Image (cartoon, rainbow, N blue to C red):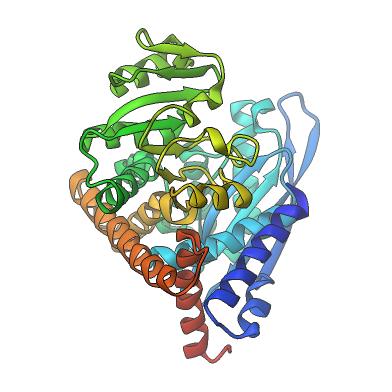
Length: 419
């Protein structure tokens, strides 16, 4: 990704500032993070040699509250990427209506090459290195690519040792036994399903019986499919790196999840048509499409093959800006990533509130709170989209979401006297 990713993010903010009629000062202040921490993490490997890894924690903006954002373990990560991701978290948290600013962390490492004990030593080393700058009311990290609830458990344990008391609220998406919440596992996919249902209400006359295609069957994709089926839709296509399964009669999502868990490949699902191309899920005859895999899946090259009326972006940046413009020309609607996939960070917020109070909600109660927040967020963006569209040509739902997001950060900074 490199600095191109950061340039794209800054261009997005610039566009939002212009569309919303905000002062140039807003762009100036949001184009730079408030603080960047670069750390080295020495790790003793299993064979006795010492490796030194480079890590970052970027704290982008705190106008709305403590910094919040994931920790990524990835061999290609750069500081510019981390700045871009932290900037996006500011926008995402603002749009979600939760009391958080944006942050992001990363370690440049190929985590797949580490043994479990090496991964634990690295996780604890990173937590120690960033400890002076984080805290339950300062900066609350969570998992991202290459990290998971086990990594969070090691980090919260390490931080608690330093603080000499249990501090569950400093990391979110922990295992439920360590003050996590069971809803967190499926929160992102569940949020995407709520978005699919709400968008279908507005543009397709309801979700009941509508055909849904899901590209990507990782954590987001599988739960998006599971919950949208529970809401009455018919999942007709699912895919992973092994290929695409297409069945116009409808796919049994729970069976597909079982097959994926047991064999690792969705192509082993016993029914339906098997297509070797993982991208084929993007092109089937469906009303709603969930690109829930990776960035840049729907591009100028293949956008003409997309038939869905509603695209709900479960992945980050799965649609290129040029392809998005084309989709709108065709009369489709794209529910943008930082609205659609915010279920994870909203759930992290709910978990954090539980931790601060040492109080636990049950799964159903938690899911109801998450659903209500996601639904209200969709309706706010929908109303803004409709009003902006009436005034200006070529407006997308992403534009409306961007303006609403910037509006909240702008007001907070104005009241604080930063602007």
